Image (cartoon, rainbow, N blue to C red; front, side):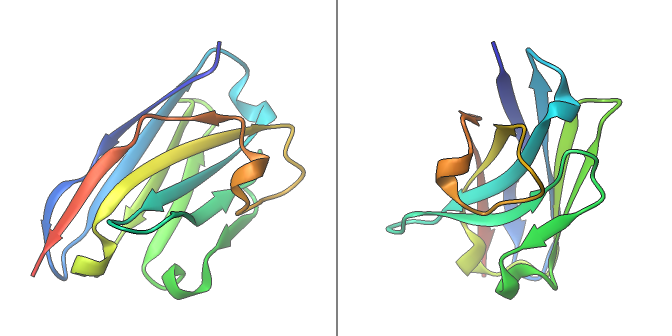
Length: 125
């Protein structure tokens, strides 16, 4: 059974940086496209970034592209999200997600079958 467990986040000062990690288990990691989503207070869950199965292609929600970087390590079964220049508007719960056999990248929630439990990021002014 596929399982995703996020870590990192916590409390961050405005302008600061943090790195989220997500450990994958239960199947062959390289078969899955991956993504990070977030849910900010009072808003729907939204995509942040996606990465293909080999790690060679990435996709970002344009407003976040300059500040966020998604990477994966297929030897450690891990996907990471580096977040820089954080603002209070980035506060929310961040989720990693996995899509079996994803051809390329996707920021569509419906393409992802497996989700982590989420990790809270709180950015204070």
